[in-house]
Length: 171
Image 1 (cartoon, one colour):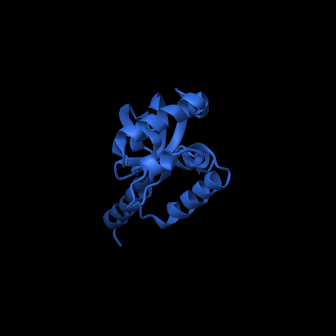
Image 2: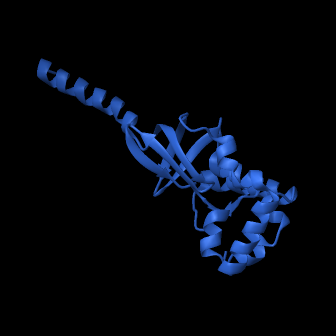
């Protein structure tokens, strides 16, 4: 192999090793929390809207529920009786702190508590349900385990009629 070929080969290997640094995961700065389902990050000075991956949070259920008026009413009653859960994201995530995250489609997986994702945290508290459209073997098991824990403890939406009014039968 000539010097030029060796240089070219080494350059290709170096570029290949650096490529994972520009993948769709990384560290971003949390810039705003509008609700439990609406979080914004800043990644390399580019704003990123972070919608929790693989779940349907209560805020999204209110808009797309089976009976929207009854659903919104039940969610409002729930948040009125549990005001700290309405601000769950603000209590567990910190603005101007950096978090690891991955993007999956137009949603993101935010690692908020060591290896536990923010989606799992919402499921554990009963503030969301698994999205039946999510087909990801790695995450489906984690989400099922978190949702099962919330159901067994009757926490969050599992202690109310939210499931009846907000979750469509086809799910």
